[in-house]
Image 1 (tube, rainbow, N blue to C red):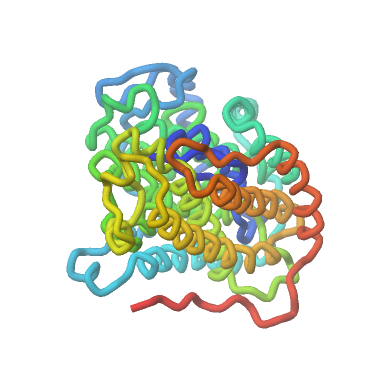
Image 2: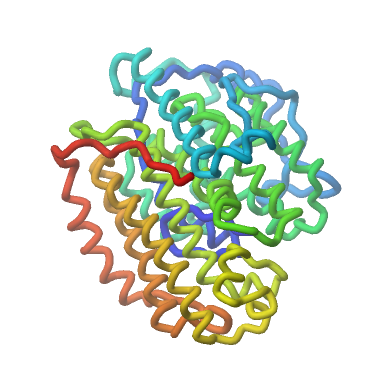
Length: 438
């Protein structure tokens, strides 16, 4: 599977690639006067036990040099009121589309931000007293997250230099957790990962949100979720996406595929929204900004899927709606055969049109972001759209040719993205609630 992170152009099958995109963490309200709910517990844990250097998950064990490791936690539960998974119960699932289920998660995240803003009264981060001796340990944890980003996501890492120090460190921590999570099913130890191992990883996540990190990298994220109004549900839903990849290699319709794209890419947007910041003069609702971020995640993941059809087919996977393939007169055999025909071209044109529709939705929200966040997000959006252009330029041959955006085109997109980033929120009516098809 491949998780998309929205900034630079990763691959549908490699998480290192998928998360090189973490950049498009579309943004949301930066709760700047934050109540650090669990810092005492966090530092007590660090002070008493130090950093655990060896971790294990399932039958695998390794050390901090390898990021695909998991490990069991200390307990269960989360301090946030957690709504059910984005997947509804069977009775509800028949009547509610995946888009509506995911939007319910969006509403939950927005409500958390609103609650934080109301309780703090302003948006300034205030310095606080820290337990002596712990600040250097936490700083070391964040530095290590930055090193991981610099090693595995160079373009994304450079993009974070545009952010404030607090936001930059928080995004690093989120990136590293997402990368480690994806590596569970796509990394060197993927063959040994079981549903039980993912259950342990989820328990460890819950402990992290309660201020009980298992290791140094967990500690950075634990501090991040204590500083920003980040909810646990998107993290849990990403783990659900890993479970899906263990047992599912076909998607019967776009409704199923949309949910998958949310799990592996849209979740990242929702995790990142509280860190990024909405422009002070924005007239848009918090919910609409979250929804625009979600659209960018979906668009990027759909683009990854269309780019990597051949690569995924060689792994026995088809991330395309089965009913739409059949309607176009195509089957799994056509995908595995890898022959470009008129039927395939027509099918791909419709798939590309849908991805562009989600990019258009995302564009409406980029202008609402804080000024420091707009440039990298616009760059991500423009570069990913160019991948779709390259698929068309390759005559829709995504079986044997990889749609590649040259460095010249990438650099040419940067000044365009910068010019767009200078355009802030308009005085037009705010983005509206999405309409769902029945």
